[in-house]
Length: 616
Image 1: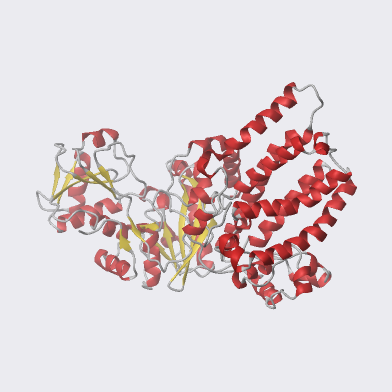
Image 2: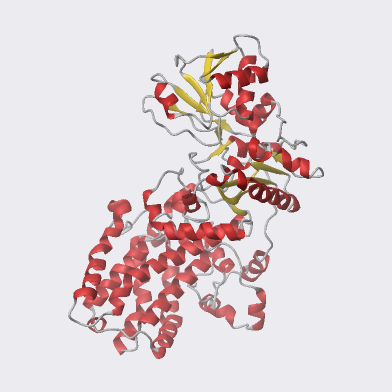
């Protein structure tokens, strides 16, 4: 929102929220009906408006994903943090597409010449469109843009756009409604002019709008990819095409580089930033080397859309079941096939904390695959390749998230150290810190807890430390009781087998059954110690998050949620790797190895991480 919002700031359909696309429904229905049952010839332009809007959305989404992927690799021009506030502000980037679509439909119905069928192709109309853009449109936009930086208009309108110092492709269309009206009037000059003189075509409209989208996205993508040799080979190009670094200076300096897509008017009127060429050269750099890598995987096929490099609005919220993603099943199937073909890990986001460079990598494997024993070899090979790649890039620590560490899969990451005894990078499975977080989530004064679910490394450690603190561990199954007593070798009475369900503090892991949940007394507190949360079946009970903590404000560039966790909350397994690097601990924490629980907990608090549950 602008600092002092003016009239026509909000979009007319803002009150409709997620149902805003209903404003297009009458036009889509009418165009479809006219095509199927109309007596007149088929009007291709009228039929193709809606598919063209879908194309524009896809085009923009490709740029969003590409931009986030490249900046996650450390190729950002403006190397500052992107935050949730900007993600929320730019969430409705598709409003301008809806607006343009409505104007296309209206123009076809109102303008006399638009009512006649447009030809598919006219070369003279396309050339005229480009010339009209290079002349009147670019010139008028330059002076309009300068006017928008006058304090009166800037505070009421344009400051909303400049709230984003770190730009993303969709920043280009994040403007108040009034600004978009003005911009469309400018961009309509070539379209209406060619229509009026009879040289317009469907192709010229398609190419022109796609060109505008392409250049807008290019200028705001925040990574440089246009090489220097192009301008050395063809010097006049520097007046005719801007670069991402050229426009990024406008967002950091504000009073320079006003041009739309062609810098010629900045050269003519002396508003070109003197740092434009040097910034362009320095922005063409290699990808950044991480200090800490968190290695995760895809929980489900649909989770591909909730990655930071995918749908920004979904990534900025905790993962939930979203019904409309089922409509994208062809894309989902295609993405699964691609991951099967390529199979290598890829970076999805990066942060910076206390001069340490953090990255999150994803192995394109799904939770279902981890349950298939015949897939273990392929999964382990992918994990090991990622570890060796991270080591080659100079990372100090790699933490294993979700199912990338497990007893049956890789002995909690221990096999990678055994296979590579000279491995310099430290492998962290995060079990010690997961135990610490779970122990500190138990209410003070608790004397009995139920421990149920699959008995993992974390479960055995929890039982051990609870017995050390004179908290009685209750198991619901005799098999669990026998395994724990044999492993812990505790005195009689520290671990008991009881099915009375009288206890209200439950430590639960994977394998918690529906019957067990329904048998718990009212007011039971379920505290997961597993990577995945239990399905919440009881409204009269309380469910904690999986082991996690709030992150300090100094941890920058956090703009997505980690799986099902709230904003600015990280899993214990991910935090464990960060703290391991911050403390410069020189040992692996994987396999049968466990770090000192108190030492890990105190170090984490010292670095500013905070518990989700107050100790009070």
